Image 1 (cartoon, helix red, strand yellow):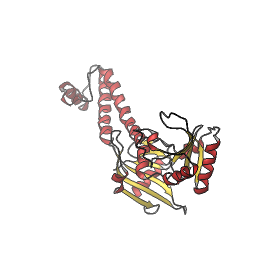
Image 2: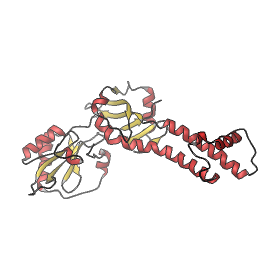
Image 3: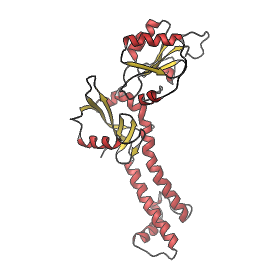
Image 4: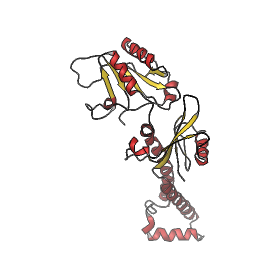
Length: 294
């Protein structure tokens, strides 16, 4: 997704303040008349975040100015950015998700059309890379520990790809059968290295790309609901379409939520945002979670 949307909790916590051009102030005012539950906050000197209280991510942002590339004459345009916009004039970046209008009435119409709460697929695209990155840190940490121990034994003497290394197999057997090394330091270093290697193998096998996505939301009546998508692939190299996720999505009330999911959500809810617990999952935003499947 070329457009980057900020988490609502971060927007509301921000103390940044910018002076707004008059046209942007008027644009915001007219949109607010039509979208009474939408709030706005400064993004920079020419744009404002558009979001709803209780959502996890902003719906998009609005601006008043000239945001085109290579425009011959500067022209102030009423602009809306949203992941629901596809602007074929641009090959990528936020401009691919912006729509502009010369007249405010059309700009307001664009805001009404495109500023919507994110779908499950859009929310996953916003947050999945952070989940994958955090999960990888566990493997990297164990891998570094093994590499450090192996270096102490001897540089390149032990490797994490040592299945075909006859000498490594013999040393491992000696450690596991309680052999008393003449050099006690070497024996201890070998024991630590093989322990770290075993932990690395376990961490790698557990570090799968698939998670269960959960977003906690409240209905207009204040009832707690959960949007759940199974088998969500958070690989850096894969992309996810909303259509692909559609068959994997379920919506639960508080009472209907499976016990196992509720238990893991309870653990992750105690973490700060971007917190990760191996075997449990990752907290991506205030109410967005990625759970490890059993």
